[in-house]
Length: 334
Image 1 (cartoon, helix red, strand yellow):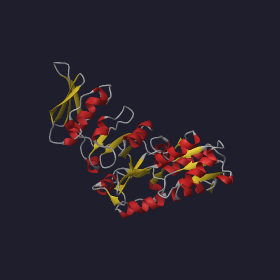
Image 2 (cartoon, rainbow, N blue to C red):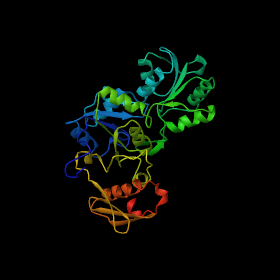
Image 3 (tube, rainbow, N blue to C red):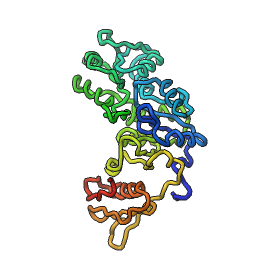
Image 4 (cartoon, one colour):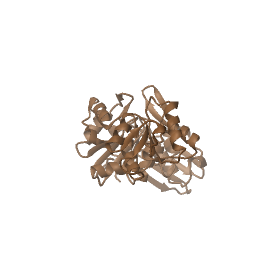
């Protein structure tokens, strides 16, 4: 791939973007995100994927529109939508479902023709669980009471954390874990990093060459890889340089971006050669990293710190070993 000819958007017919940490943080847009997505929309269809189950697709679309994007509810794919699709394959149509979640989850359950209930005493056929900020012990207890009967359990997602305006907060994974501890079993999961939510998106838009953008390796990038979709990690949310270098083989993105402006910019080529001493030399732009045995050394920091991170990541990833096998210089992650 030539750095002079290709950007991450070349040949892409659908751009799927995560929301928290990619488009916005809290109520506010992340710098350059809106402008970059509007630019991308000139050549590709745009869709938005979120594991956040507390909001409806319509409310998400309205929020994105208020930031300066052109978004309809059908452009938003939510983990409740994917979870209800899974649920439909597990229980009969019209079943009574115990809903542990907010308006976004309740709406999707009822749109699919199920009957939403909020008490285990109503003898539900299954439990569906998603994040919402007001969840409390009483709601988790209802899930536990119902699940002790052995009925199916579907979770919208298992994100351990969620980025909000004040920082990083506990996500749905912590709430699911509390119920899991009480009942001794795990749910079927619909959202990232499972493939279901990506499959819903690709099917809805009829895409043949999608690109997904996320800020988390363990959910966004792992999920897109499982679904066979090219991915870009943007460093405006949860995961940063240390996590990139340590990414396992299933959680590595095709592209590493500092912010979303780089979607439309030429992406640098990664070049690896073996020198006369048997060391592997990895070059991205004018940044150079040398790998000899278990030691990494920065030969040239280059003019772009992101290219140095890309070179360091490529040097580790191509080795076949994890980051724990190497002495990693702090210049790569500081």
